[in-house]
Length: 325
Image (cartoon, rainbow, N blue to C red; front, side, top):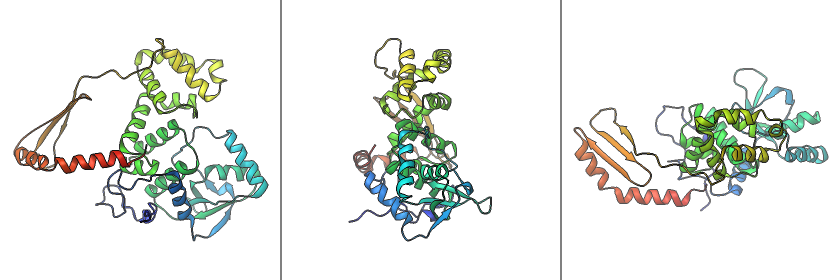
């Protein structure tokens, strides 16, 4: 059975706080995309059957959520030369600005827009009226398929979406990543300031685990002065992005050993529904998890959960195995 296009019907996605969504993404993982090929096909499907127009690049603004750290790299220069030689093969997707008549906003295709502007020619575009949530999902999925964003660029994009109030389901769908991966991205960005990330850059040769290690070092208040000093160093500023990462990591990791997260004491999390008929307290130290409940409905709700543990665990295993990183 062919996989349903995730972008179909996204224009009908409800506003924040509305009732249950009527699009096919139920839970953060049930409809996540399994491959880059499928993501690319979705982007093509989104443009299919639409009229392509020529726009002056000067009337097109960038997306309201930035997703790239590096804008003038080797890949971009190659794109400029390709468009110079044979023209723009694939249109970009834009939407009407919404606040300024006659202007547009890029959904995806920022590099093609920049290339057209640099070459002094119009940009070929599809114009489609879509809402903000559809915009960020389409932008994130198209970039996941074509733009080869690095881990830290994806993490920064996820963090920016969360800051704007988007829930983890929307972020997971936009980045084609499961809940655990999104959580790790957000955690890295919570520990490392955007200024430090910007100073390091996209770091194309640095993967997720190295960024997690750096975040553990950068998150220590005792290292703040060292970080500020390194970021002002001329050798640091003049190095390629990967080298800047290594320089900061080496300077902060004085033991020269792999950095591991220290096991924190079990934290308590409390939960209570609106009717306050159940009070739950959860403890999780990474190795053990406990849940205790009290109040009027605690016994009945506990029995309800217990009777469904098999189903819940199977659902947990299915999402863990089916969702790509």
